[in-house]
Image (tube, rainbow, N blue to C red; front, side, top):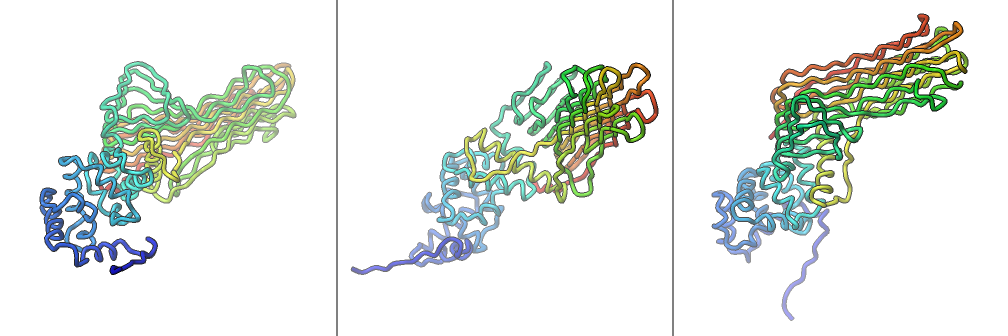
Length: 473
């Protein structure tokens, strides 16, 4: 029997360019077919295709140097938006590594497509989870931050407006337009909440709470360490930030309870750019200088100490470092990409980037000695705010450390105050304009004792970091 056989090497041994060029030069193909596909792309006219199946060969003239990435993207936009062919385009993308639509081709062309077209391809049942992730990651890694925003919001609710106080039931809120009315407070239901919108307009206040403070030796309702401030993320093309509040909470004022050392505050989590240091909380007061004081940490204040029983240490945060502002924004968008794919599209990639949660540490609880002496709780450390906005209009951020609690004594003993929590971190990343953004980053004042060594120390001041990031579209 006549004929021939072929042996196909594995995809890892074949470059997309060589395969495309080989297919494009394969002699049984009609010269008319080749010319028609090239002409269709060059003229952005799908009606010039010899057959619809020639969509599978779109990468060939691109790798042969006959058409540019922007010409291909415009042609695919036309196919998707005007010819209703999102499904066939999605199927060609998902056929990799067995078709010509290689990872190399997709990553070079997709950023030039419109957000509406990209979204239709992502929503198509023909696009598998891993290829959908590749598309969104490509937008983030190529710094097409605005296109990423418009892609994930194109089919989101057109508008979400908060006209009364509310507590969020989800950690990620996505809409084309998010508005918070004047006088309204929106409370994050988790330690970090994310707002994703084309236009973000906050005329009220958003508040978030972080790690809990330390617990006293007994269940008395005093001497507790303050809760840390939470984390707020805003990702928007245009952002009027309003008031974002991630301040730490005050430590409890001391009261009589049974003897025991104060419990340590819970640890917070921070994400920073190289060169930024998380501030430290204030040391709790002691009966004498340095005696049984609550040790501060990053960034909770230490609890006030007592005779024989130390105040609890402030919570000591985990700190994660990015090499640059763009690296931070990109990583955040990758995590949000996977959240969106899983929770909105129901597509779960093989591996995912986690959402980054950040928030301030809790203050340490005060120590106590029987019925005569007790230290105030340390203030909670302020949390963190991260904003990406291509155009940022204005905003005011409160990231103040919680104040230390006051001491308690009787029978002439020393009362000790808790240390103040440290101020928080605020990162403002903008593409075109940074607007007028102010931040209160003061460390919390130390709690008052009845002698100088017994006063808690103030927490350190936080950091405001404003930087332009590269945005390609």
